[in-house]
Length: 247
Ligand SMILES: Nc1ncnc2c1ncn2[C@@H]1O[C@H](COP(=O)(O)OP(=O)(O)OP(=O)(O)O)[C@@H](O)[C@H]1O
Image (tube, rainbow, N blue to C red; front, side, top):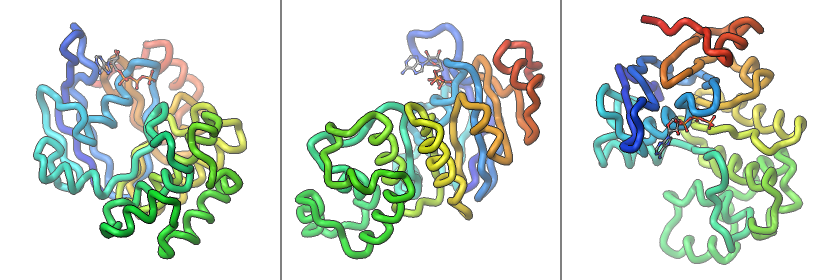
């Protein structure tokens, strides 16, 4: 899905400065992009705006031509989007496997709901759940309740949940936080393997950012870098605050 942001400004009610300040950018269908930038620079707010969870005061957003501020369009956008959120939004009390399957819930029939929540894996997803879990190193934990998993294991369950339904858009907010270098790379590989899918990943990790063909950096809610070859100097400027904000 193509993402178009045109002059987006979003200010939270208790803040004097905008979280996003006149952001305009286009991410093409099937493009893979990293959002980089210091803490508080607006990465999560940008991802949440695409998902209709933040409503900008001005500007226009289109996701696959749809408008996230329209409830009907938003339902379609969310159905087509896989999300890995920062922190933990898994359903406690359910197994890792059931949580991973929740991404496919829109395809479940009424009877299937009850069966899946009781631990059944629909046959059409069984092989792929195992394959994705194996690649993320969480196959042995699929039967465990998520509250008994480590933070990094939970993070990988959330990744499998996002990827399993084969969405048209994948949004991942710091998907490697809390992961060791090997599992972190497996998570990046899963996102990069999503060809024909638009992928937007936020990260603080430069070595991860450099694995993606396009890096968009934010600072103070504004785009301060948009390119492919991030040099050490570019990175320093983004994090030191000396990057030139385009007029
Ligand atoms: N729900 C909210 N209410 C008020 N202010 C918010 C809210 N969410 C974010 N902000 C503010 O908006 C700004 C941008 O936050 P955002 O979470 O988008 O940054 P970020 O780049 O994702 O940061 P991090 O790398 O630390 O996750 C920050 O100043 C933050 O305090």
